[in-house]
Image (cartoon, rainbow, N blue to C red; front, side, top):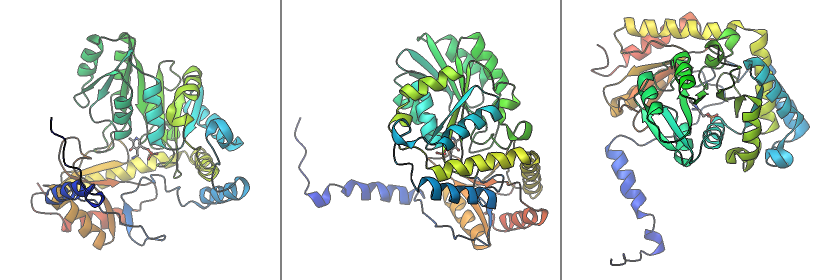
Length: 391
Ligand code: PMP
């Protein structure tokens, strides 16, 4: 083998420009668009499903916690980062979800990484739906387990993979509500399959919590699985709770195991007290106004129905997320930009964020949308639709 030539320092990263050009010609360059503090545009792109991120109680609790405890948490959870607020949030989350215990992480991404890696390993098989969130996929990659990613929403494929596994332990990993199309996993069927094959079930309820189930207790609660000894739920505090951070909710011995072994818990700076306080306050708001969750679903249903009636290829929402198919990555980007120009902020998903290669606008409903917001959004999205988007 010949040694490759040694590039001078200013050429070491030249390959990044080659890659950037490839992305540019495929229409895959991403842009950061800072959001103004007070937007007069209609936000159908964020994940603030209950409109709590700007709620005065929530933002106020966050500010007060920063003043009391400091701007940062000062250390990892096992050193100086745990405050009484963290403990309180863990107790309240567990109680709200009907589980034995909970553990707060610095993000939903970190919670997923930690839970998947700590609950598997070289003696385990992991079986996943192939559309699971990127953070779960990274957890699988780091796990050293045998990983089988099977066809989307196909319980029979999960069953087959479990039945033919070569490892004694097994973990089935799924989103409750899939983040691209907003469709719901068949959780009770999956739980039944797990039980007949001695597998644990890990459900990422990022998009179900606060929206589905009694008073927003989530998809796992709605499926009657919240206190189950073999089910673990992961959450983000950054969507319905309008804050920041993540959590794992489940059996006490699972939580103890995570405290001792989950590397994204142990080696990560604890969630800032201000974010913990915001999540706690949002959880109180959700308890006080259990109707908030139903309102999101109602608004999502109305928005999707109107988009479909206008001829767009909109998904039927099981929760807050609605996707609208675009003819290509380029037209999806231009479509989202045209909507933004007319005051409607929508998300745009394209490869590699879409598992099936179909680019989409991604809309999210909120509890505080009005009928006229929905009408205005549908008008703009339809008027700016590229050729081929309307059936
Ligand atoms: N899981 C799902 C399904 C998500 O959509 C997200 C956020 N996009 C996460 C996990 C990660 O959560 P966080 O943003 O709190 O890291």
